[in-house]
Image (cartoon, rainbow, N blue to C red; front, side, top):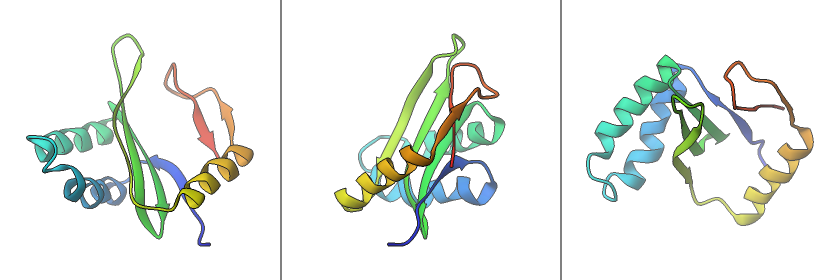
Length: 114
């Protein structure tokens, strides 16, 4: 099994990988999806939204979270590509054992460290 990486999406290359993962899967399902994604990508760069990704050689899963004015975290997008259920369970259980939570820079959120 190749190694999985669960991490926050921060740099320009990681933000651009969202297009390759999300557009083919969701553009037909949601009107104006590409416009929304462009806005979401800019807001990830600005720190308004938080992107989290799972990589296995390339980006295979992502979630995009937006913080509201009341410090509520809203899940705006969540996508897993076709990876086996066993691999998905391995990601969860292995990372759960290795992760610890600490106080984040942003109120109301936990940061996961591996």
